[in-house]
Length: 413
Image (cartoon, rainbow, N blue to C red; front, side):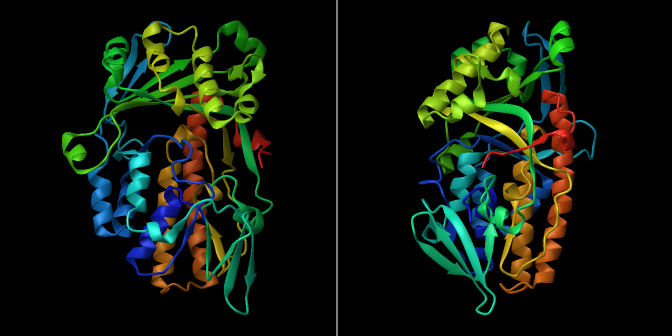
């Protein structure tokens, strides 16, 4: 259930092992709303994809990736000058610092859908499901009144997972009190001329710390802009339909800083239509950074305003609770362990989940036992804990998160 990255990876792996499947997606189309732009995948996700995807799909994935440049430059938001810069990923062995691939999310999803289009249906919003142990059948019910039967239900239905609410109703997702605006800026000659040249080599970080007296009153409320140029080689372009080169960026900070016309942004923008929401999110990005140097703001001023997306940052707790394993249903990815984007490992973790589950199902010739599913889920929880910990550490740096345990429960359903 769900045609996000993890659901599609699982589907391709099942196809490789000749195990029948169907993918149901709640959105009217897989590209009906922005879902971020750039992914960085490190070695374990790359290995998982190589093991799980059919050969031609994996080859397409490899050749459709963007150019990879590993390094970081930090810029001062008020002067536009370089604060620090270093090539490479830092200390050897640190997770997340040595990516293997730079991936355009839309291109990746297109690759993952290739060859399985006939097994997918959109506009199928899950409302509930029921299991029949005697028949060994799970039945899913959709908002449109339709239903479908199968032997095993995988909840890859993201943050608002209906499957999670049934399997694990006590699992509390935490509201970090922060928000993020994702955006995309065309890599035009104008923006390349205005933005600091050293900030267009690889990942660049711009950190705006709270002024001293304000921090005494409201506490630390840093805002961080992360950006990276996404460029494709001529070889890749000759083989695939790819977007024009662009600058991916994400503006992250406490929700108190994300206010538009004096109103909390996440409530104001989310109540707008899709086009209005994008316009309001773009306007908000300029409002938040109004004191910044013009050279830095150029990447926001020249953004594609139809591509801006505002989200609230939520996260699972570190220790995802267990549940009785079932031969009828399980969960993976954001459906069970959403995490802050500040660790850069959410998609990475979901891909590893999907490929691990595919191995479990394939090894059992399509009929894993409850014990085998339980072993998969135990490994998934351990993997999620490591990733959530990394995301929590990044959140403390980027927007001043204190502790996930201290955060309020998210009530976004």
